[in-house]
View 1 (tube, helix red, strand yellow):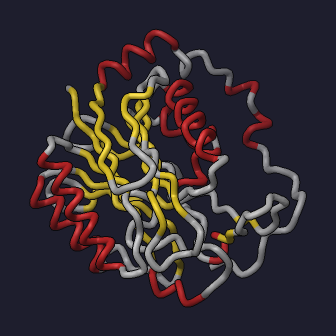
View 2: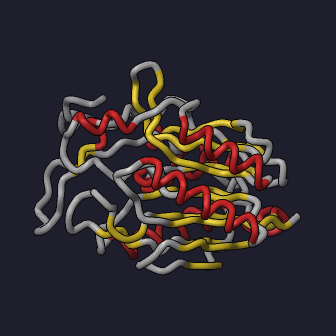
Length: 298
């Protein structure tokens, strides 16, 4: 079965409702074009606010049953699509960088919480702005779930920084993901090439489709001189680029996901069968502490 998936990149706004209304309109547009699965960028309800430590941004967090997810649940029910909608989650006074997976009936299929949380507090690169996500987000404790959709495609999710960890991408493959979506908020020009290389590597190493969706342009009311490079991209199971977005405007990128291609590729390469877990012990050993964790995480 072939399923059309979509990546909806857009610029953020300090006003939450502006973001949710824009996402709702893009979801309807994607559904009208035949998409059955639509994914939005990281922190789709807000600007990317992690430059520095400002507790005022804690107010951007909302529960899974808050107004933003409720509105997107209505859109999913109206259009009959699956929506992967990242947001700043508040759960029992703990805040997470989360992506909700909403089914075509408007019900929650599940959620994923960003697992690896960066804190880039020192830099020797001129013009770089330190970012401290550990101040805003607790690390997810849900593991790396996969989500069965009614359209026969099994979804996995990695959020932004998670994509730098091949172990996470491999776990999703071993759990049977056909498509891994990667909601992102990335602006650094030198990462632009790394972005696509990493996504292609995950697709090749795990024989699945990858869809990376980035914010695009500057956030309205966000950090000055920060413009996200968009370039949302779909990669096929053999590493081929299927579709790529631009770097200047809101845009929807489409690709067909075919489980038969995933199965054929895995049967050709047998990367999962021929692994040697008995030889990989070092990969799962705790790393020696080289520097202290930043304080003040929420």
